[in-house]
Length: 249
Image: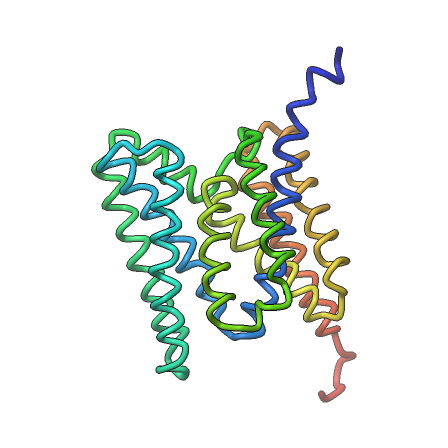
């Protein structure tokens, strides 16, 4: 009976594992392309579109998902154009896109009586409340990546897949967790880890954060983000070991 009582814990754990499997390969591509701020900008655009969907048309989950995907695709198209035409300034310009998305989200939240709660959820979702439908949507993203993995080097394929996966992941995991799940495993790979080892370490960090949130009765999103971020920071320590005093690089 105790096992059945806590069986619901498997759904958020599965959502986190599938989220890492869907986001880690894209994070490696992001670092390789040098467009790190794109993660935040596209995720924020998806969140802003979802908020406006709720404030304007009281959209159902499928309509909200479709509008979030549309916002992410629009943002990623602008990012792709900026990356080609203004390479020297692209990170600064993408940063401005993120600020615009954040401002649009605030304006959308202002129009909705429950806007503040929805904005908080999209920023750092409480993954403990993830359901099977959301886990299945992340599983579909993993399958899509498996089918298109060899084609992600192409800009058109990468940007479209990135926008779609992020728009699905943000409502389930939250913007902060999506960014951490993209970047932490990618940093581990930069430090010499294999792709699978980096993904497994990120999954372990996610599950640790989930357990910490359960034991301490703390917000699950914040706990998971902290664990993933610490993992990413450890990769930097491994790559740049401390030198003895007086030794030059």
